[in-house]
Image (cartoon, rainbow, N blue to C red):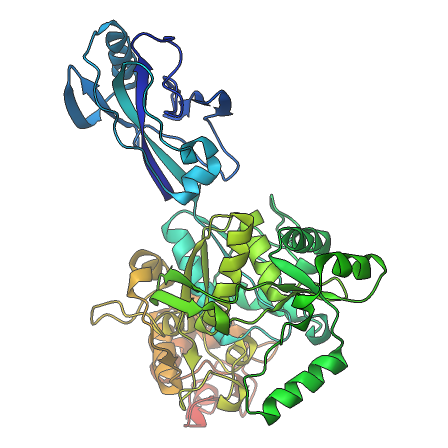
Length: 541
């Protein structure tokens, strides 16, 4: 699905006594030509500045009001008229022959996104120097495909809370026929854990979540690992310095540690005191050229506010005096999250950024970077975190948190997906059992709640029992075989499935039998038991 980012009505004007092939200056565009796919071809003429009208840098499409055109015919304004391409061409020919009275120029309305693509639209409105007639108007759309991303840091095993965010990204992409991207954010090199990327792939694939672009899949914006994109981040960090939106910082770790200790002693908020911000630009450039180790920090305005409409938290606003001059590029050449995420989201044409609400305080810094580069800001939604029973962010102190642990304990992916979807999302009905296909149809972004959802293990156990019973017998026997001793009889497994469905809690993780499972006797089946992760430690077969 195409997401409309911005739009504007542009009058089509023709000078009565001027050149027939030009519109009034600053009143773009010229008469359009329409291709079979409905995309407008033409040129924007403004003060001699000619700009192509077809596809633009941001993947924009210029369309006739969604294949409609607002026209003035004989002084009558007809809105939302459905026109075929042939009718448009015929009406354009008729308009050439008409001698209409000059009319007042329609207003030009345009948002920031569209005017950034077409600078002519930002030009000041000037009065006409000669009579003109309005032969119609274009409705311009700046649109983009829905593109969302999951961007884990490989600092440990795949966390169940991260899976919930990924699931919401996946559901939104599938609903809108969009693209899901996996991007590895490995800029924190000191915390990297070997095998963490494998954990992401294995865990998400087991849960049935797939994506179109990523480190192993490739894609038009590869590489999808941040440590392989370092020159891109340095280029943008230096560009921010050149624009006076960032500055070099020469403070050592020792100096920063002492600063924090002194602030704590005074019971102040610990944050950078901006001492390097007061260095003259010429001196800072010279010190950089001399090879002095330095970082690059964001130059946050000292006064004012910055606001944003979050898709979950609605309107949020920050006082800039409370926003720290955070490091964007470290002395080792690696970016911090704040720079890398903005650059990558822009370059990869991300349309929606979905992440946990613990990142909401960082949003003003990201907005300042977008503003400095004059980039279109993606839609943002900050989802509530998954909380433990104590209403604190779910962590290892609450028990299992890695996807692998739940898999090893005998939970099936359908139950985990169903359970996670409902942590923070209220479907608005009494229905609570969903398959992945049903979630794709029914999940809605506007139904995501602001408050965090609490992890309830007993509720997860209930979903697991429900979804185990929903499996067909052959599917369940196939899955159960992975937990049984080598050489176990498939006939015995299949015959045990109905009883296991009835009594099973989490999936059997260990099978104990008094005699070999290759036996098909009923006495053997009765003496078998499986170890369960539920409070009832064992359940008899």
